[in-house]
Structures are given as structure tokens and as C-alpha cells.
View 1 (cartoon, rainbow, N blue to C red):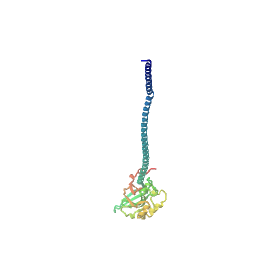
View 2: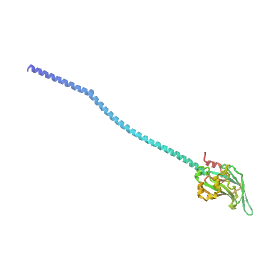
View 3: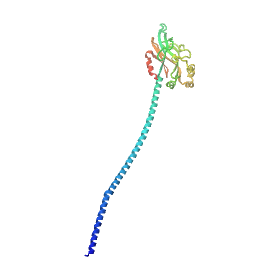
View 4: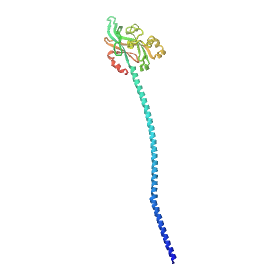
Length: 293
């Protein structure tokens, strides 16, 4: 083996060693670069991907929550509107109920017109004919006298009071109409059961009214029309309707006289006459019925 071959062998070994060293350096550098650069970058990318996925999920949840919130707001808005409508309806219903209660009280209000006191009952021992002496006193709603008392003597024990009535449609009574808020009444005569009504004693002067209506005022043209054309209106349905009258007619009420007793003649706003024993006629009862305010 010559020198030249030895040198070549050495060179080959050296080259191999250098290459091995270079390969080792490159391998180490690659590993070091992977560990220090690429691996963290991959981890960052994975973390970023997770963050993006979480963000998308969060955005989706947020969007769903927003839709639910909007739907809830719409529902609340609808409920608020419903509550407002119901509140208005309740208010209107309460007003209607209040008006109805007032109307019902007005329809049931009784007005006192007069009191009849039985002063004496005289029976003829021979003929057995009975004469009843009475005093008629017009009164106001409080039961106080408002006119001079008038005395009458009738034949029989049962006393009849005859009058004319004009009853108006309920809506006028309910509305407390100035002219038609109560049944109008005119006293005509008083008589007993043993005599003909035509022979009874006249109570009022022609075309006058009970003092309970007067209160110091003149009779209105409306009332004059009714009293002066009473039977004409009663037989004319069109005229009655124009005046708001639902019924117009005569009426008689009676009671069996008991000496010493006093009877109250009352008129209901929406109806006719009634006779009540004074002991049962308590002014406080009627005041409780009357509308307040």
C-alpha cells in the first residue's frame, strides 16, 4: 500500500467524519428548531383553532340568546298591550256597573206625596151606613207638610184615592232626566167603597199637580201638555212615544180605614202609587236607596 493510498484513506475517513458531524449538526438543528419553533407554533395553532371553535359556539349561543330575548321582549310587549286593553275594559266595565247601580237605585226611589189620617169612622145604627172622616196632607220626601191639610168624608170603610199617572221609559229615569226622571202624578179625587167614583171629592184644582212636584216652581209646558191633553196622549201611541211616555193612565189605590191610623201615599220613580202604613214608612229606608252625589 503506497503513500497515496494512505492519504486517500485518511481523506475518506475525514470526509466521512465531517459528513457525520454535519449530519449530526443538521439533525440536531432540525430537532432543536422543531422543539423550539415548530412544536410551539403547532400548539398555538391548535389553541387558536379551539379558540375559534369556542368563539363560534359562543357566537351561536349569543345569537340564540338574542333571538330568545327578542321573542321574550315581543311576548312581554304583547302582554303589556293586553294588560292595557284589559285595564281599559275593566275601567269601562266598572263605569258601566256604577252607572247601572245608580240607574237601579234611581228606578227604585220612592217619592212621598201625601199622608191620609183616619180621624173617625161613624156607623149609622139604623141604616148601618158607614162614613169615614179623613185628613189628606201633602208632604215632601222627608215627610214634612208642604200644603194646607184638607178634610174629607167618604162613604164606606175602604178609602180610594184616584189619580192620573204618566210613566216614562226607564232610560229617562236612569239618566235622571230633568223632565222625565220620575213618574208624574196628579191627584183627582177621593171616595169610599159605598159611593160611585164620579161622586168623589175633588182633591186638586183643574190642571194642578201635587205640591211635592212644585217646590215653589211653575208647572212646565211639558207637564201642562200632559195634563191638559191627558186622554188624547193616552190614546195616541205616536204622541206618547214622542214624549218618552211608556204608560199613561188613571190609577186608584185603596186601604181599609182604621181609626187613628195614618197612611203614606208613595210614588216609585219607575212605577205607580202605593199605600204604606206610617209605622212601616221609615224615611231612612228611602234615603239609603237614593243615589249619592
